Image 1 (cartoon, rainbow, N blue to C red):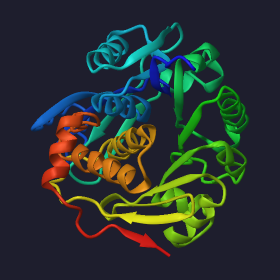
Image 2 (image 1 turned 180 degrees about the vertical axis):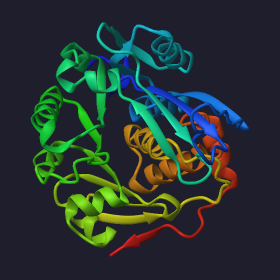
Image 3 (image 1 turned 135 degrees about the vertical axis):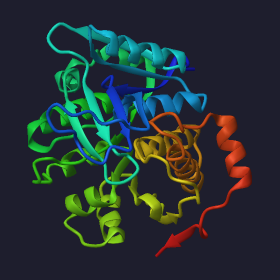
Length: 319
């Protein structure tokens, strides 16, 4: 009998700091000062937000990556530990911790971003001994040709180590939407994308057609539709799960909270409908509070929410 591993999920990249400026409708000119209703300070980055969400649901994630040798880096590590996320995070001697300033999250957000250690850490830096301590690995940050071989090599090693793999593809800033991704996703057990990412990578104009493309390459494909809910395919079954009716405060991190809920169900061995239910509920709760992880529910909060709320419409099977 195999010994139980100490961690459920390995997530890669320690994240950054998000500074959220509320009610700022214009950037001040030189010499001017603008007063705003609130400025808040949060952990950011898909890896950290998904890790926090998974930990709040009672699972045991571990994050590896780099932060700066500074206040922000120590804040990230302390907050992860406080919420039950184990870390194998080093301090960079080259860069400071990444910071992103988000203006006016109530409407169309704009950002000022310093990448810092976010781009310094790569999948080539992941200690392979961590593979022996986890049963699943979640990856983000694919950038097409620039890191394709890195991702292909890493996923191959993870599968050879007996791990299951999930991947949230992310936005391609180059605009190429490199088709080489289809060399990687056959080794990915759960593939996540949002609607625009899925349409671009599949070269389709309809999300259902895009889902069919991904379903031919990976056991589980999930396309997040924001307020429209989510569509997914697993083992020949295609399903649409609507979103829940909530009051939206800040959409930052909603997709990462969805990932946490879905992976919670997936790693418990639940069926597709339950995985989508958990993910959609976590994503919906996430937007009710400011900051990427503040609204991520505990298991008790998730259970209570699902007991008292129904999706906007019925869950449907797609033909």
